[in-house]
Amino acid sequence: MGVVTALVRSSYLVNAVYTASAREHGITSQQGQLLCVLMGRPLGMTELGETLGLAKSSLTGLVDRTAKLGLVRREPDPEDGRAVRVALTGAGTALADVFYAETCARVDVLPASLSEAERATLADLLGRLVNDNEVPMVFLDGAR
Image (tube, rainbow, N blue to C red; front, side):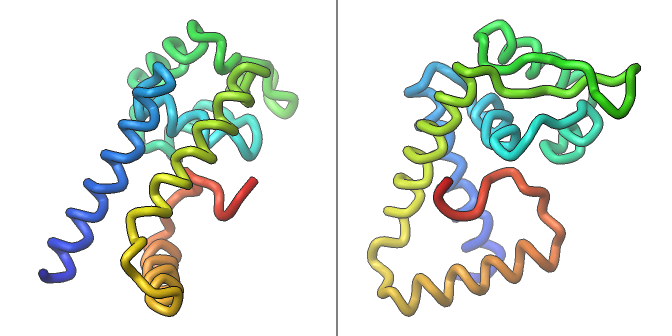
């Protein structure tokens, strides 16, 4: 299998795990991504849109739907009175913690047939690929 095929198919594999995990928690995979992004700190709508790669209208809909579930809230931006930030609620933090841990555990099983050395090499190579392409922080590194 060539590198392009391997990368595309492995991306599909991780997305399928992410989607299944989200579905079990009654959310969409995009809502799961939103929760994971917000685990670090509240973010403004512009930064959130750039991180998730969503247009303003799509992001507004995602935040609205997730807020209706009681998982996120809009709050004033302390640095810009005209802007809002999106933050996790208590319920959102609890779900994000569980969702993140379960998703990590499921993804960690994917390379189970690799030796520890092979897993370390894979992590190094993928880490370089991510760093070289400035991928936004959509998932925390390591256990929380």
